[in-house]
Image 1 (cartoon, helix red, strand yellow):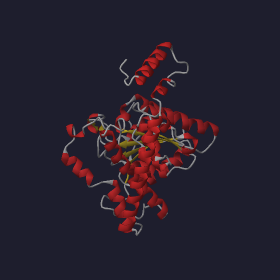
Image 2: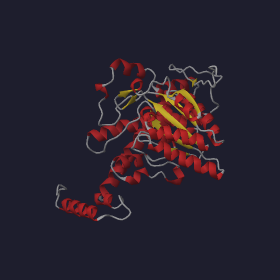
Image 3: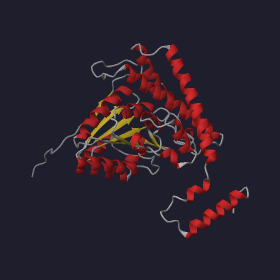
Image 4: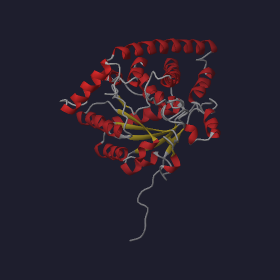
Length: 362
């Protein structure tokens, strides 16, 4: 039998807004000024929340925190493209996406303070709780998308994960299952260059991460993740496909400007020159330049937005602290099991006794 080519594939790459703010008007989405300004404000809110959260963690007022500084465009623009009935399925760095879907700042802080109540997305927010295991949430998103496909309903599940997650079996199984069952699911990989300290080039020999969709028989597209217009367009198109049972993997090229979590030190594995280079491609600076050029932003408007955000976050911090102060830490023993086993009851009793005596080292 002669050797023949049985299939060939390509991966499309999308950029609409250049790093200096110039726009490709042929590809520019027709978004209302209100929508554009809403995206900008949410990106600024997410950035400032992360900065304040890092400071709170350093003072011992917050638990381990995973900031998304530098990844605001990938999250806010994609979540903006969703319909009200769609779901987001986050990992642990999706504060910006959650804010876009209406999550209160106080809830995000409360969760970081150790209170599970802060993770409740509820049916109104259409968000599953943050997922700490790397990649497992992709399978949950397939389940949500497949359920809607079986019911003949429109909603889509949008799953977020990082480049490191594409090296896990869970994500590969999710891509394959979504394709096999026509799940109404969109996968958004935020390729920020590092899986904690492991650089992208050591994770996979694949030229793109988007092409990992090919083996699952689904669409794969790459987008400039620091370009909110391109992310919006790519996500909107992917959602249209997914509603018809054609799932999509989007690889958003971005950069984690800060640490993986507050327990990480990126200076141990990243060069300063690399960080400076990505600073020039900052998504907020880029978007602000575009909005100013379009006449949607002025110095006074930017100053007003900054002041509003500072006041909002300060108020949320105080309310989150008050909520945490009223919490009873022994409650964490109540919800680990449907029926509390005897050994856990003994731990709870010891914990309570320690708390009453002023310590928990019994």
